[in-house]
Amino acid sequence: MTENQVDHDRLFKELLETFFAEFMELFFPEAARSIDLTQIRFLQQEIFTDVTAGDRHKVDILVETSLKGQPGLILVHIEPQSYVQKNFNERMFVYFSRLYEKYRRKILPVAVFGYDRIRDEPDSFGITFPFLDVLNFRFYKLELKKLDWREYIHSDNPVAAALLSKMGFRPEERVRVKLEFLRMLARMKLDPARMELLAVFFETYLKLNREEEEQLYRELGKMDKKEVDAIMQITTSWYEKGRVEGRAEGRAEGRAEGRAEGRAEGRVEGKIEAKREVICKYLARRFGVDSASVQDKVQQLTDMDALDRVLEQLFAANSLEEARNIIWEELSRFTQ
View 1 (cartoon, rainbow, N blue to C red):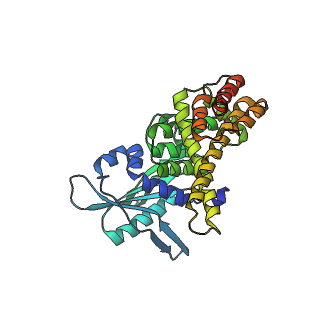
View 2: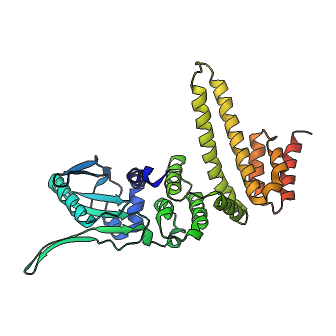
């Protein structure tokens, strides 16, 4: 997916609507302590027309909530900005004005700058004369590229995990950032849908190339076995989900009703194939071309439990010979 094809607004909208409370608590803790984050409602997308410029602008994220201990409702307007735009601070004021005109409520404006460069974006817009300050409009701003990703890796906040991919890191740190993202996911133990949302967001902005993937697997081989097992369960589930959905979709086309048993069998086959693929990919990246004969043996494993046991033990293997023995032991169970 190219930069032009990425729907930045949709990605940020899904992330922040799913984890709105976590976002506010992480980046704007003072506001989060005053806002009732247990009672929130996302309002319909607002579209404004700029007659003079001939443009139509939309407000993607608009949250209705209240302040703790105070009567009345407030609005939180979050504006993700993925590209540099001249006079963006003025645009924030125009949005604020239009929203206030419609709702007549207190509005907390927040701008999230996610483009891949470091700038000093203003967080205010003013109109002043030598004799009178007419307007001093301010808003919260979050410039992701200015954040040090290392400061967030020990957090169990899902927004922090996803946004690691947009923070400030050097090119040579890409593998480490991906590794820490996986470790965060393993600690948080979210439900599959939320896990997938975070993974899609992260990999849209930080997708490793083949060489970096090989480096990632080498780093996994050096880590604690229990932690690696947790990470591999996550990555295996992604493989399984894609494989199972693809197979299920293919079987659904042109098949008559009454073949539920065949489809179930196909899904099991998809899971087994996915696990074999993960094992072979790890062997190739850990031990190189010398592991080809061992990978051939993996293809002979057709039992789900056996594959699970291999995955559990494989990351403790310090040599190709140890890995071969682990797989041979499982094969021997079915030939005795």
